[in-house]
Length: 394
Image 1 (cartoon, helix red, strand yellow):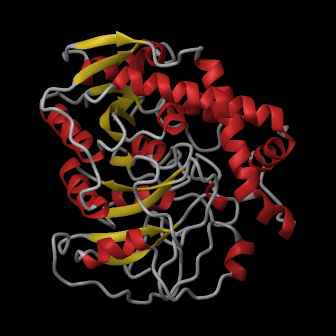
Image 2: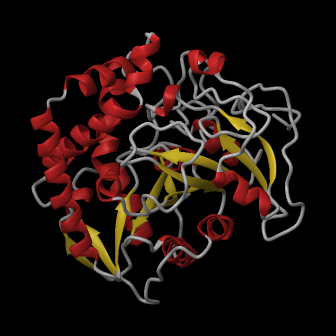
């Protein structure tokens, strides 16, 4: 890292190697952190895995996403922690530890882009690159009380990044406010977006809201309740059917992209990660084909629901982050409850922007917008307008 102190333990303790920046440009006033699954020239890439770190050479190229931000003047300050192989949601790494959530030090920060979210939330970086496959930007953004975006799938280059599940993997950003996120994403996307109308059609997702407890529903109402919205159902065959399709298809991708590395190196996996690896390996071709067909049907449903002007007023996750060292049943259940909501944008490959909306039991809790394919910049701008016009609960 290049910063002098790291009170939140969010940076990898690499020897500080300066990374050239343009020095001027539209992002010249911003500092940049990069998740340690992305290559940065002069650094190794560890992916939260001691085996991968030990094998990694010092990289001689920088991933295009980071390079674009550097070329726009952003100043690199370090590489950030990740869950092992980016395959988790809690931000807890048995090898390298758990970064401290600046907004709730007794709670998990969320992952797998844990260090990037914490660096931004703690004021150690203005923007940070993360990856989002099943929720690895959106969950920590909600948990740490900051902004984050999972962009339209395929819109941002993932060259020189560790893959996890190719048809789900995305590269996105964190920031502490919407205006900074919009400015940085405009550079990252370089005009590759389509606009929303000035007055989009808001959609109230009844079957997403049905998954929330009373406190989370109160935050949703405080943020979105005054907006005119049409009631819709997001899951055409029900929540469980969509989640099953998600598990099958993301598992099939992981089996093809990250599992061969795990098995080839005989990497000992932490609890939870070992279960996901085994489940991916056990998938049959018939199960995968069924999941892919269900995913296509789900995507067609969501795209028809949105049309060119629809915006889903969606909870990011079902609850605030849980406390460190939870009971085992909380640890096992929480990821699935989050993913039933997060899988909507993941299955369909659509953009989702998360922003702070309130607090539950003293911890941050975020809301989000999901929009049509390619509407990323308009979606952030729309979120900025909604937040500016809403009273955020203390």
